Length: 114
Image (cartoon, rainbow, N blue to C red; front, top):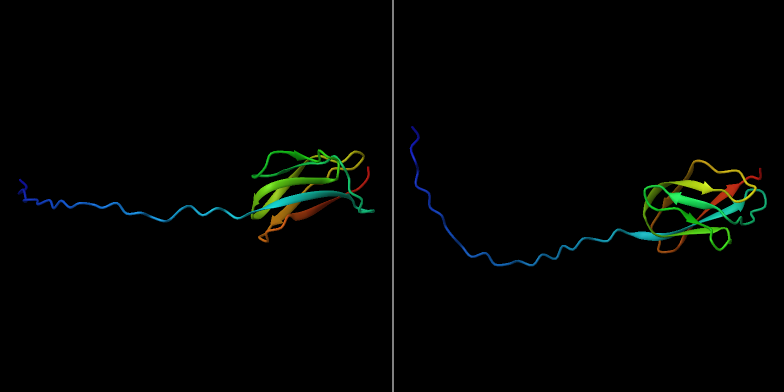
């Protein structure tokens, strides 16, 4: 049989403590993907892209050859082209690396005619 030992509890008053450890916002930047003809450098309208693990599909709605993404986290991402510019072949294996800098980062995707 086990012997019971006396237990003494000391009660104290706990004062609330303010902790100033707010979550730190992740650094982001805006990204633009520009579709261009590989031979002429001319901007090509109508492409759509998805930044994997980051965005929904975004398309060149105003037909200026540029697709914009806001507040993209820093890092390396695969980009899926969901629609190529008219009369151009799809581009596979697009990767972008988003770095700190505070400015809009531009990435060019170069297309060949069909």
